Image (cartoon, rainbow, N blue to C red; front, side):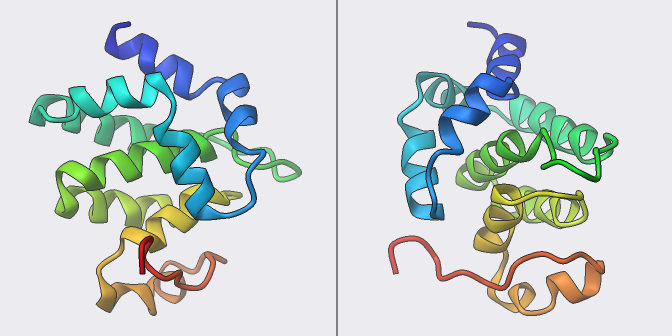
Length: 142
């Protein structure tokens, strides 16, 4: 599967539905990492070139209009991209996380953004962005 196919799969409604059956962040992350598509993207993200492409995709998805009556259709994809990016370049992921916190109507993406945020930024990110982002979560594994 090429890069564009990976993104199309991760951004599909079917993929989102499959992962959205879970109820907590830890299980969401575990379920996400079991997906072959996610593992393939993880391998690609070892390259700075692909990290930049995912960063561009995050920015693009954050700028898309959202139906105010529905969840952001990019929520699951944004969460996945942000989590994987954090595994390879935390500084870049933190910058993308700030952008994700401004994206409307997210659930998983906001939680991942808060999860990967540097400790100093965790308490003030939602107030600074003016969003209704969730409160800080403990780091996975703690």
